[in-house]
Length: 436
Ligand SMILES: [Ca+2]
Ligand SMILES: [Ca+2]
Ligand SMILES: [Ca+2]
Image (cartoon, rainbow, N blue to C red):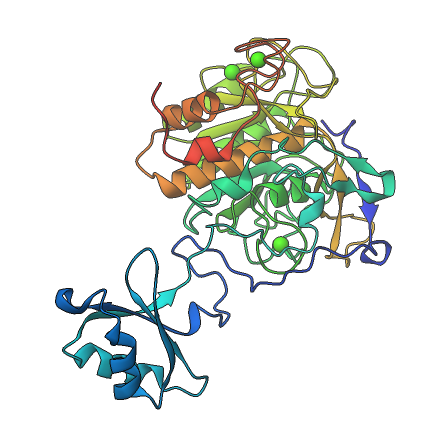
């Protein structure tokens, strides 16, 4: 999958169109405060009163209240729908004390601030989020140097999905790949120890770039005002190096890595590679991990031919092809009845590590390949496991398939050999499942 993985390396200096500025504080409302920025949580200078039954609707209430608490109260009016009274206070009002006094007032049965709710997701504040059409495509220019724009809605519905889950830290995604640049600025906080089966050492550092890019798509540090957003904000990455600097790895080495990850309670294995040959070496390893409850997410391949192994192992792997910013299939994405779903794999934006620039841990850029579609699905599986930890791996695989959008239904309605069930959808995957 290396051959067609085109990395366009981009330094910060070339990016002059800086990301959207935000007028509201950065936060994520899912019961989990991401940033404890101080913000208004109620309408300022406003208190809402419920008056005891006998007095509700009485016009004298405002006058009585103004007389009683005149020093603090600016105005009182009745709300036209609820019949509650809206009390406007002065800026310097000791609201806490006033509420205490109002609560003790025999005329009043209840008192509340007018609290503010909000729609339940904000965009994460990662610097290059607008280039990640895969996560949120609103028709923006996602590739400025090539002036590429996509179709609104051709994305995996990450913003909606994150309403349900942004992932737990105890869910680990193993990246079976060329290693990971574990000190890249957008990954350094997300790593757990892995292993290097090429050098037989604990140092699973990337010497190619492929693994770093894949890892960042699945689980880059997110909402950290840096780099990119990962599909799973909080899940961890285990680098398992089974490919050398040229992107080549033998089945026995790969099998060792798969078994290693499965033995370490890793729930998700991302397999962004493929070989043309079937062999018990690879098949047994996939079965071993599957039987231990792992979700194996595999790329189908990039040469417009049959699905490669291990993605072709229907019983053990979820096979992922590549779609683009128009929800169309990449014309090089491999096809066959083994394809389960697609995810964006064309001009995907992620973290770059270039072995020729080892000190540069702040690089980002675009890449294409089913290699980069698969980690979207691995990240989605991690979110689902974080949220519903009692699901089995086969249930997770089924849910990912059955909740996908059949985005090519105008030409290939239903399951088809190009897109399988369709492009994954995090909102339908994670949200309440409608019964038809
Ligand atoms: Ca980030
Ligand atoms: Ca399959
Ligand atoms: Ca279809």
